[in-house]
Image (cartoon, rainbow, N blue to C red; front, side, top):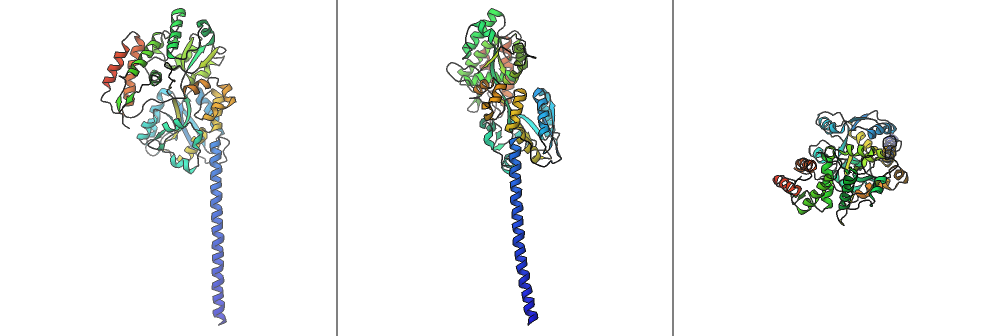
Length: 444
């Protein structure tokens, strides 16, 4: 009987100890899970802050591609502060960037790039081809606060509810002028396109110069015309059809024609960099400049007008607000990246407030983070920031769906023809072109 009792007690005792041990093990497991969650949260906050990350080094090399130039050179230095992975910037000339990105993203089994620098007009095409990784799950996984980004830019990088890119560098057209030249003109800074045309005409007729604009056949001319069209209340597409035959489009093309008529000699072959060079050389009294080029105007080593250049928002049409066309870029994760988690966290870090501010102070670049527009240190570095903010207040992008790209490419030739021969019948030309687009499809 003792043996039976002893055995029974041993079993009970064993079961008790097992239960106790199970509870202890569960507590330890729960504690470990909570600790992991806390570490993940701390890691996510560290990455998004842009400060020295607390994440342990992963020994992963991430290759990022972007266009080359001064901003790229600065970013190569800034990424040395990221310790979670090694970020290698492979910068490419702008005119070769899309081609190189496309070739890499089409490769199976991993491409050349983990991080892709994406222009807003490229995003729908990249996304529809499945070349970019949707970021929604990663945003939730790492608890990324999306409120820090400009919402309209973030929406533009969203395709069918999937966020494809985190917006970063942004630029748009603004007025840049030589204050001493404007004093000779004797008028105020133009507030409407009619006033701007009158100003350009005065310089053309009295000083043999005129306004510097990017009127060569290319994207910059379409961007500028798009802003004029939107400011006139027009649209490229309406009810699924090309709408360049409207009265608003006729008004917009007339403004384009007048600007070209009173543009500086040679402007029909100028891109945005040529406009920038004319400003830096001190030969352009006034210009429609891309904001991304304006920091160079302030550099005494590069610019003859460093002490006299001023900036203003773009003019409107009559009493209507100016509606700019925003040109911006985002960091995306290549769908064929072998390190998607590490690449996403690097993209968050690259677009964080601290890193974006560092870039702004280094080279005058303007980020997609609204909070930096009120940062006094940034404003001192970028005196044209208020003009950019004003220009972007009602900004839109050019159409991207369906045959939009084909339509806009053809429009480049129309605008170039007018720039080359400002006496052409521009209204008839744009209506004729609209008719040629009648069979285009603009559904997504």
